[in-house]
Length: 470
Image 1 (cartoon, helix red, strand yellow):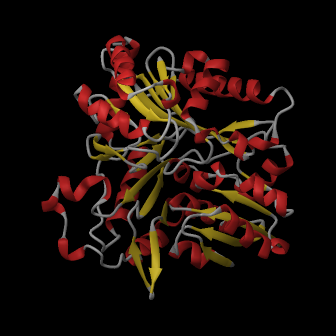
Image 2: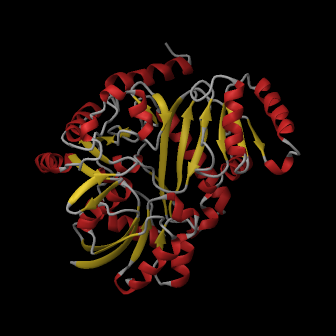
């Protein structure tokens, strides 16, 4: 069996899912070299060599790659920060290792302003109405306040406030969800404006889908649609999070989508891709340069944002049902001949378990938290036992966890996810929830309504109303 060395730049369960997909290879003896944000127990067990780089510093990642260059055939990157900071540019300039992720220039996740301007140029119909507020354009706070309030008058306050740069200020805020008065909105706006440009755009009503596509620079190959759950609590309440779970249906689209919705998404993203790169393509876009948050309005779909890497938790719903060897998929990306990707005709549901302070849970529901369990080790034993029983139908992917003195502990972000796979969304959900309940310790909690029959039905009804159908 051919030996293959793979560099994996890792943060969270997304990379654990990649590592799992590599280690399931039937055609290759895969040796993994993992540059990790923390001492993830899953990754440590699977890796040939594992290094912890807490800030995912590009220089240190490159040093690790250089040290093992003779053993590494290619690399792949999960988290956005090193992509935005040019990890591919650095490694490819200083080693012979080809990387699967966009170059720094094409990581448009780095700027929401750049995204809106790109879409305005190539697919203006996907943009909501928006206005860019740049600090260099205003002499004082009152000047920007006046112009902002005039824009709010025009949109009847129904807006989303977005910082240009990821993780700057207070992040995205939405009228009716994060603020209900103009003073609250202005406070949120200024917390972002102090760090740089802010976009204030029309709030769009609809149902969201996550579109992901692998790209070899010449071809864009769409993956099945997924639905992410951003809000912290059941019923889509509470603050936005990194994503509390996700689901996919058996086929390519989601239950609330039509075939025309799916085809329209593909047409839009391909149009942006072709106009952006030209007819000959551009290998700088290798990886998943289009992980697009679409919102379906019943008329024209809009784009909320585009990311330059795989989704988390969305990719965890896809990789376990790949029909093809993931190593072969990566080689086809590198060779420029990726023309299709086959997945099993199965549904998948991802559920995250997270620490007590995550998403403001302990503050919102103090009586639900076991104070005695806070900070205790997390026990995955029973979940792994269930995974053995279910075989390919249950995956357990540690995320923000670290190994300490033989025990595993939750960190501050999403701790661990389970992926259930089944013939229906309901079956996949049941398996995922069974796995998540088997995880003990750490006072962890989870959303109980991820991919529930009620939530899916509500999405279908909402789209029927928006389409004006009975």
